[in-house]
Image (tube, rainbow, N blue to C red; front, side, top):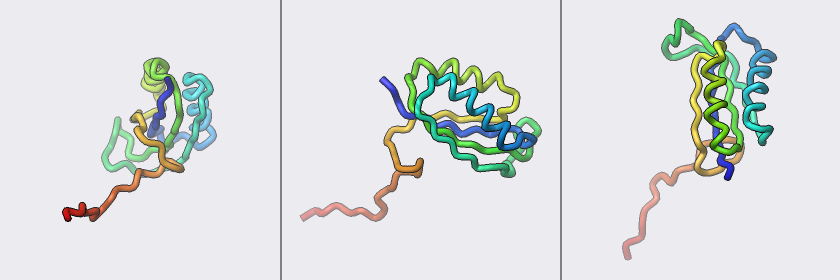
Length: 112
């Protein structure tokens, strides 16, 4: 059974887009060639220093894979020294283009 996941990476800011794309291709190969969507956010200043880095290259990846492949995937990310920080989450509901699910604000129940 496959599940939908999303990973946010913060790479070392010294890397350029082609190098980041190469690292992302290596990580996605560990997932077994599943449907992978990549969104490069580019270089941004961090809110606080992480491992003496004040800036990082952000990338977001959405993919579908079997949960048994995740431990080796996570291990490879942790061993890669160019990854400053990462976060993997399981996406509960599929939303178009990776946008957050809309919330009902001000919805009232009818008590008649």
